[in-house]
Image (cartoon, rainbow, N blue to C red; front, side, top):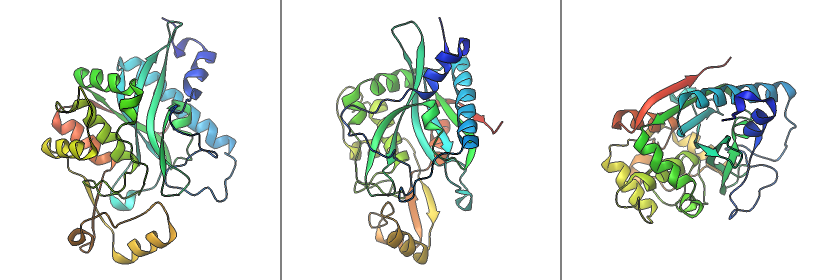
Length: 282
């Protein structure tokens, strides 16, 4: 079988292929998770080169792994003050093509240019890593084979893949709320749609997905965010809101939200994930 490792042309096709879900409107300029589009800057050659190098290294590692679905992350923002290393999740899957080869696609949710709205995208690995990264490294969890099979079926079923997307967006949306939905929250809720016995063969709601996550021991990250930080963020950023968090938690500076770290911890501790792979900067 001809793969990206055998030809530069095929490799670039895999890295840069990107198609947005047909039921969503194309956003222009491209959606950027958690950043404003007021003063867009052209990408620097050095940045593009490093991003594509990371995408190529990821592609080769994924091809060698034998996996068909992985939970993939990138380090788009510096979250070290919260003890977090990664910022954004996508569900990456291997898609066979008519010529006997394959491409890797990433289905993920992006905030639209710092607004309170969001959209879902299918992108190639190249585009996934071309989002002005804080660190040029990647990581992913390889789910167990039964979990991969269920996720792959859902990711290739467009109506179901779209089902739990909720457009109103907040970067720190409450993990157990339904008013907003941030990117990592969409990813884990959509995984629940595939894995929960009550929803796996039909349709479900975000509440059902969250109930299943809670029953399976998922614990969101509790961020310590004080009142002055909350007020400043809410006034200056349309994509940050705290009003969906329970009053008693918000006023004690506990903001419970879905992070990459919490999702990875849960996948490994629950036995749903079999391998954690880290690809550090080259």
